[in-house]
Image 1 (cartoon, one colour):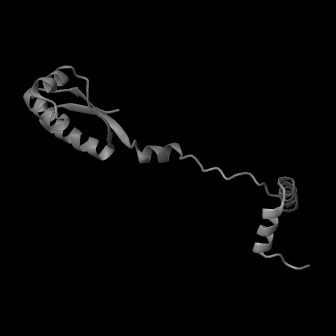
Image 2 (image 1 turned 60 degrees about the horizontal axis):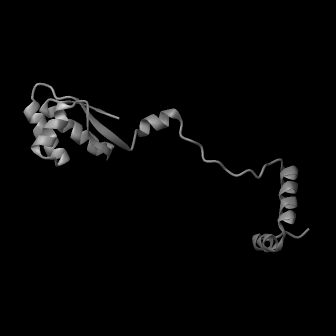
Length: 123
């Protein structure tokens, strides 16, 4: 029996009807004990998802501590708000300082706020 080349097989598939291709697939499945199911990408395990961490987070200040003025200054730098708006934000803790920021930027924001005396968490 002559061997078919890959090109010959592809030529057949280009010219064959869907029914003919379906018959070939079924014959291959039966002959070799395989299935022609589409490959499905495996979802990450819970451990992998935890290791990866969230890509974007919201920085929430839960307390301004005992150095309110220093915290207001840092909030102004981070948010670009005026003095009055920054003070309102600090007065109304828990308050979202910045939404949907990359995790590394959120860590920098948290460090700045905690250095000023605030308590911060991510959501």
